[in-house]
Length: 408
Picture (cartoon, rainbow, N blue to C red):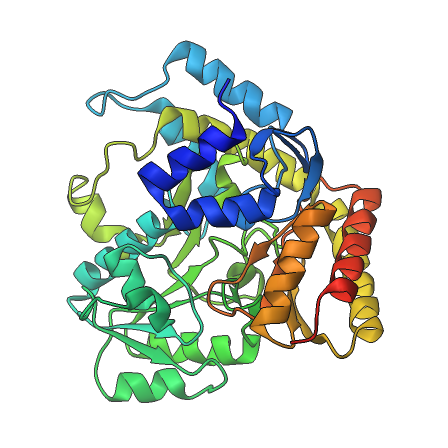
């Protein structure tokens, strides 16, 4: 069995010394070894709560119904021929379109979030014959070259002179921003996150989004809601945009779509957006798109999410109260608490204090996800399967970590 020391050596030699360093800090010299529900067991035998994993583990680790479905598919046909029809992908697409209410009937499956961002923008440009795309300041849509153009932070574009898509980033607080941008020239699509995850769990104002959608529709611009992080009841609803009545042409889903067991993402969209792919199904394809193991996970994952929806509302209420107490107990450290549902950001007084809090949390047994685009913010992503006792334990650890971190 490989030791933790050997793992860190392999990371340094073959992947990145920085990955080895950050992993060593997070695990205090140990590595992840096993997981069940909301807990991860480390190589030194310690158990930690996982309120991070970048929003993948909405159903925790190894949800039994999802694992069983993937096992059944593994024992039957684990990969697709890509020549014959794939019934697992067909059933998954039918289920997902119905899950979002049936108003967006078309589905494209990818593996990572950036996969479906790329295909959504590609289809929008082809469907409209336009090149330009509107995105939002503070938004994050991935790091592959096309998706990176939509991502607002320049941090990820250092050393890259230009990206593959002509993008204009609009002000999230300006209701007239889209109208002005479209008056300056046509655009294929408007892409936004209803709740910006990497920007510190910032919900965009519904009145602003409604005005943007109306202005986009008047100009023939397609509207795409990126809910890869905030969708699937992470923020309370199957789709935040659809629940708010926003007339979107596409919704992007991912992260927990594979039940926290296998990678899966999806574009769920209108006939108009999908038209280029309907005319030529080979216009955009991927070897592992619609992979049977991933698509087998989708129905039980959606079942489990819906079964836990009421419990998620209870957890959200408990989180509201706990984070309000945190802010009142540590006013010098905690500047703001943002977010919705089970996607929350605690904004601290400085990047140094935020980094110290993350290390204190790891040392005390709570894993979280830092916000890459907002280094002052610590992100909490509680799984739907968390018990009230586990959420209380996490809030107690968070309180102790903030108390112990220096004010820098």
